[in-house]
Amino acid sequence: MINTEIKAFNATAFHNGEFIEVSDDDLKGKWSVVFFYPADFTFVCPTELGDLADYYPQLQEMGVEVYSVSTDTHFTHKAWHDTSDTIGKIQFPMVGDPTGLITRNFEVMIEEAGLAERGTFVIDPEGRIQIIEINAGGIGRDAGELVRKIKAAQYVAAHPGEVCPAKWKEGEETLAPSLDLVGKI
View 1 (cartoon, rainbow, N blue to C red):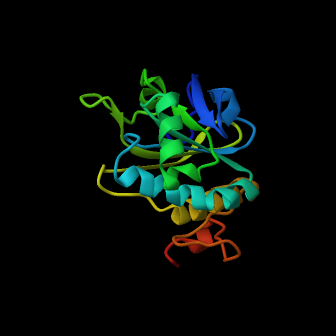
View 2 (view 1 turned 135 degrees about the vertical axis):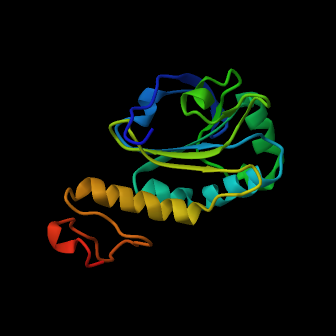
View 3 (view 1 turned 90 degrees about the horizontal axis):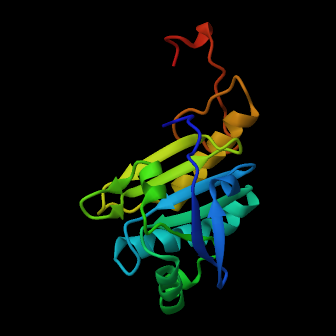
């Protein structure tokens, strides 16, 4: 799926106290994160979403929009947002996918359960998937690591001919792949 264009979708999201429409077109023209999780009112999910909410201002400064997605409805997202202190701090759109179309488009549907895997997708401004992370249900994700990976993806996109080595952080040395480096690293 890396470097493939995202598939078309339309959905309703809960965002800043309102229901809004979201489509694949909203993910184009800027960097986006589509953050799938199994279900509202659960256990690991609020820890992940709360962590992501803490990093949301930094992601916004980086020109990145976040869309959390589960197979719950937008109504359920509102109820969870209104009743949980952790979820109440979320400022990014919480997309409802009760038909599972978006979840299937990104190939993270657990068919027998009707729920999404813990899948994270970073989409570039052209609507192409640049990063994919999928975790087993019991393993929560780290938004700080996601931010690091997005910075690397943005750097590589802005600097053709350069790549970011393992554990690269903003401001550190990159590599320019060439014959001279073969066997020297």
